[in-house]
Image (cartoon, rainbow, N blue to C red; front, side, top):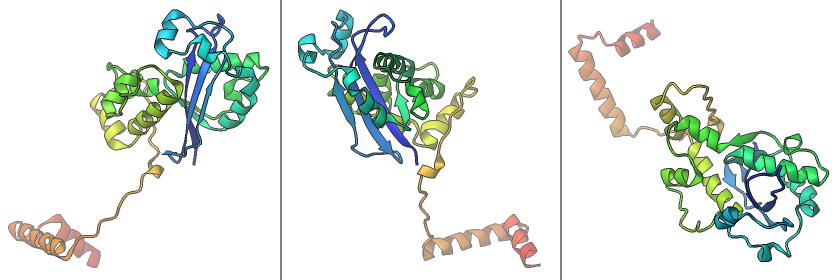
Length: 239
């Protein structure tokens, strides 16, 4: 089965190309859609101040980050942790852009050269719930995921919340297929549900249930003067 990593970052600002850096990386591992506990959480010294608006979001001060490792010193370890996994990211373009920049500064190849697919839960949510709010907070509220501890945005906490949201968002018929059907047509939306992850129970009818079923069939047969489809099918099978 596919190894999946739910990933989130916090940054000093909004533009990696203009010098903003990653200050926190949070990863939660799923295997066969189950949490494994093999998670990754690192704070980094970005060697620059956070923008005022960014600081209000994550609350990670320069003093707190001053003694943390630089991204480049742990870049190879991060590559090995993420290698060959499918990444689950909300608004993936943002985090992938920052990670690519950090790997470039560390002299390494871009993210997609060593990971599997990258699934953007924001794009997936927009396809399933077009026209609705699809932020992480909104999705948590929609699926009943507890976010009461989310005073600030934190990469590890957000990755944990997103893992729960992702499982709910892709859990099967009532989460995907019904919502897609209710909103058809969804232009360009392709939603894939891996039904191999679901175990369908086999329920055996009790004796009284079989007797009640047979009685109902007899009543139907009597009301139709023996012309019910099930009787004709049975007779044809015996012929």
